[in-house]
Image 1 (cartoon, rainbow, N blue to C red):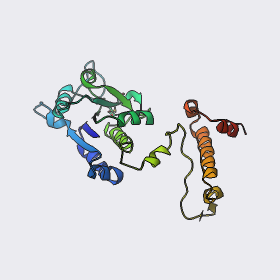
Image 2 (image 1 turned 180 degrees about the horizontal axis):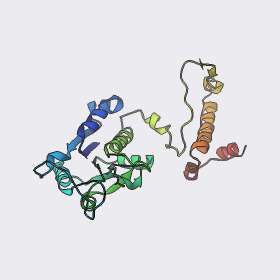
Image 3 (image 1 turned 120 degrees about the vertical axis):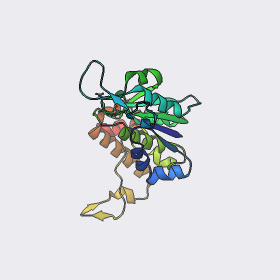
Image 4 (image 1 turned 90 degrees about the horizontal axis):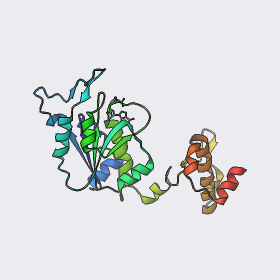
Amino acid sequence: MVFKVLTLFPEVILQATNFSILKRAQQRNLIRIEAVNIRDYTKDKHKRTDDYPYGGGFGMVMTAQPIIDAYESTKPDKPHRVIYLTPQGRRYTQDIAKELSKEEELVIICGHYEGIDQRVIDLIVTDEISIGDYVLSGGEYAALVLIDSISRLVEGVIEKESVQEESFSDGLLEYPQYTRPYEFRGLKVPDVLLSGDHEKIKKWRREQSLLKTIKSRPELLNGVALTKEDREFLIK
Ligand code: SAM
């Protein structure tokens, strides 16, 4: 999987992805992250990449020319998706991460200021994605969210089982996790987890997932195929 990120701040992308799982995934050539500096492509003699909005109003808008030239410099040959990160986009979810992890290459455009000239969207963008209903100062933080969440779904980056058991994988939030010591500040690990009875542990985890989901994100239950046991547990 190749991520080509068009940004005014390539170092934000490159430095933040140079740790832990993403670093190892790059070393093992499972993913590649390229950051293209949009400013390198501006034809403005003062190296500007933004201008005042037509029609007036507050703030600046990123101009189309450097973004389009930066995009063309990435020489995309195969069909590929071009994502513009924007609070006006489709809300990002684990399902979208899964869908995007099947692509070979993703181009990601990070906006700044008041955003980018609409003609960039009209000309090259295939997907507008928002990471949530709030406004960030730049698309780099959102790009990092996409890169991280998509990379961990790329085969080999982390253990398959780990992805299968996580929150959202079955539509529910994950059950509580415990590690050593058995007792910490008076709080003990639930006995069932020490029972060695895998069926019991599975059942407990499923019930805890249901409880956690109902408490924190009840709307998620609408998209979950509940089993007979789930229903019986929820009625109790
Ligand atoms: N004027 C824009 C609006 O009202 O929709 C907001 C621009 S925001 C200050 C600057 C840049 O941050 C955007 O172009 C986008 O790339 C990024 N951004 C901000 N919030 C975001 C979000 N929730 N999801 C994804 N990207 C976001």
